[in-house]
Image 1 (tube, helix red, strand yellow):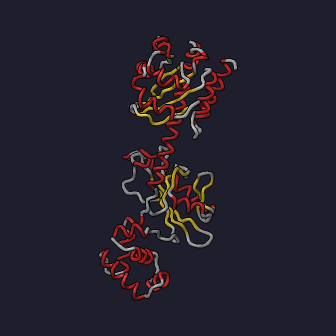
Image 2 (image 1 turned 180 degrees about the vertical axis):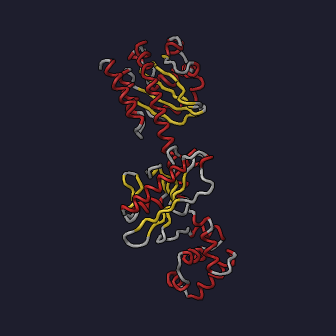
Length: 382
């Protein structure tokens, strides 16, 4: 393949791989082919610790021995760290006869078919370093200066692509962590852009959106089935977003949360409370730059969810006692619990007395209040 066409295809592959969850192996393989190398790897170090890797022509098990026993003794590695951003060949670092008599060549590289290496390290970000190496056996001859220049031309693009992938991964992880944090909140809650586009919502909110009644997502934008409700919701988003971007001195001294009632076909409605996510709000400052509105949803028909296992752990209840507390919080009567557990009402009353004693409650209503206000309402997903 002509060198110019090869380089063009390499650049296309590098940027395609930046958004590919499977990583840079296809681009690495194409680069190796253009350099007539049969092995290659890309390594990312954070504060000197390997955090990510990509290999072509061999797997990471072949690298483990190098990392454990040889990396600190490798003159190529130390030379690369001393000249970050510079593409080097092994012949520039070590005279051929000396290299071929070295322990690292005879005890490791020769055994895995590696004689010539083209390598470089470069900084992706503070404390984040990309290491890159292409290798081939002795029959193929050393890397030429034209190979050094070719890799040198490609490296700026490879750095950008790795930065892009690192950023995409970091944003994906941040959203996943944010979703997990929101899942702890007992009510449906979502973080939205100024026009109502969903950034992240907890599981309860997604169940509400996909129920197909009242609220729904249209190309990520939260809206309502009723046109009147949709207009009211859009206006409420606009108002909340405007307050979110107010300067501190312009923000009203007393501002009530914006409230919209969204009707349902089956009757009733869902209350939507929209809160401005101001620039100082951690969800916006550290969570997502486009966040402007925090939406909390109140669904009167939703069943209150408590975790019986958490109830048991929090209050020292037995399994049966925790199930009774859970049933009462769900609105069941003692008689209904007795039928479900196949025990007498008197036995259920005995369990209730023990539950009241352990929780410090004096009557059922107080027990329910204690349970609803406890961490048992916040089931943490793993």
